[in-house]
Image (tube, rainbow, N blue to C red; front, side, top):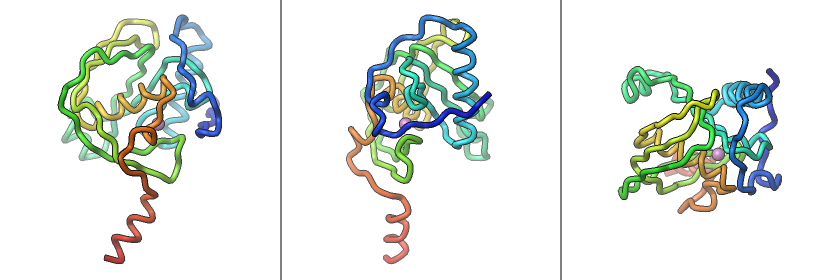
Length: 174
Ligand code: CO
């Protein structure tokens, strides 16, 4: 399973609307495996197929598995979600502001408003229907990844963007 190259915004694939997954064949399974390996190696919490230059509606999300995550997610900590053709079918009116980064935009983070709670439908890697309820940080990650499928990046909607290293340096000076 080779690692795939994570592309940056200078590659137009990242700005395209991705097409729906129609086949859960061997080629698709290889893509899923490669994306998982690429996410682990990055390391990151989420990856969308357009980020590895494949314009298909496929995302993967892995919840962290550290002590904080175990407290927040319980048995779900460390869980890996593979979702093809994800759709947000319900979203809370309530929004939550939080900090996001993106593997396609290394070195930066931004402040982004997201729905606090969402319900997603989609299909697992074998084409079986899925329904996922997510809130807080987990809901944020899913919204970020689903945005990638429509060519949208967090920098398009962030109220503020900065290099974390610079802010830390500023805070150290205060
Ligand atoms: Co991203």
